Length: 76
Image (tube, rainbow, N blue to C red; front, side, top):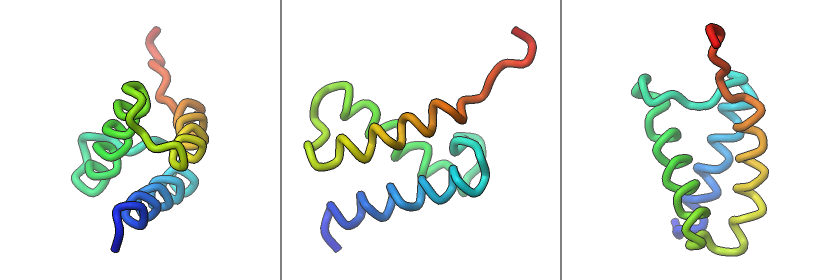
């Protein structure tokens, strides 16, 4: 399995999770932690300009979806 295959797998897993559960992965649940860390790492890579061009478009789509599902503080 190549690095691109692994990235695609994680991307698809993240999209499926957000479509199914209507939330972003949490750092507090063990089964969601790997997705949370993958997402956070790729956000940092994008900000630094280190994310390869063929991944940028897909990841920006994922970011848009994640921003729509962002948790809102009910007490603010």
